[in-house]
Length: 409
Length: 126
Image (tube, rainbow over all chains, first blue to last red; front, side, top):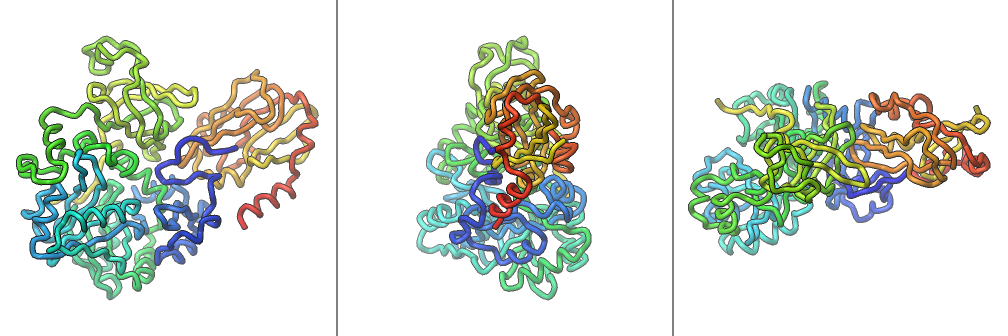
């Protein structure tokens, strides 16, 4: 028995090189001993030895960790991600040259989703940007850390300092019980709503946190002083409602929530408009056009993109994996919502799956795919073709599972 | 039934005369994680030892399962269609994949016994 096909988005080939073989090149997070105690299975990920899941005999396993996150609360070590502070009097203005977000009007203590764009409007990386009292804090993808820091340093100008915060570790507490768990430690977190930032006293340590995450659930991301991260993780996991969850569950959770993964669903060849992220570019920035990549992006907002990222529900039980080709389905009459528009003959290549896995909540395969824009309406049938297997799929509205953020009303 | 025999690719086979039952090992299911789909061969298919005959899909990845021996598929475990997690829960018993009539039973004698397979697995983990 051997694994085939592209590496899944969590980068684990079951028969691939074991962590032991490549261990010397990999970094540990400061929580590695806690993961080992909890029965973690480690995989190499973006230069780190990261837990992909925990021991199935002790409530671990991707599906079980996923369901626990949707019903209770899970703690994820995401210390491989980069935290970068941008400092300087004109840091907001400088960042607006790189990010299509409305930063100068953003209130202190709030967070936005944004992206670094190249000249073609492609996504160098997607990120979270938080306005703190004295700086702008970016949380960037682990795999793009070096690229992003170089891009920021090159394009922000000399008056602005780019300060990677390697003294901090990052954990995410996610799930419907996350709010109650953290409020039991510091009631002040009750004042925070989705995409807001503050501080909490966690076991005597002041931690910066945001009410956000990558699962579609309510929850927090906490930046911990690395020397105290172990104690804080112990405090959080001492609550019976909290269990560890690994990168495997993080991937299936974000996919169910319809959230893009950089390097798979989005990348330097995909624009935010194609990826359905136009909502993250506020009106002022669409008109102004004063950011890198503005021209192609604003043109696409006007004219519409030629490809779009969509949700897919494959028939049957077999997951349709990333890099699987999609072709147009046979002639449903044009004009019906479920039909293939006239003009795309059956069998024509029309797109590619960018992420594909199994939804533990729907107990069915789900996928994201980049497809021709005229075949992107919900209900459209497409055919996935991989290794002699032909799977009919239907374009579906995202998210697959509703978000349950704690929003301000 | 004889004792199980094992392959380097983590399949097992149990032989009774010229009939055999085939599955993946407990070690394999543990490495794959949650199994969500098993594509089984058609009954009556003639297989050569070593050819891809099943596909196991876990949440993480898809893997081929190779024919442990040559012969004809006589039955498949239809319980896996509704409950693929049977492979996680009982890989070497109720989670079997297919039964076959062996065309060359000697192929099986060359496979590892349990002690040899255990040594292989222990070596991989060390």
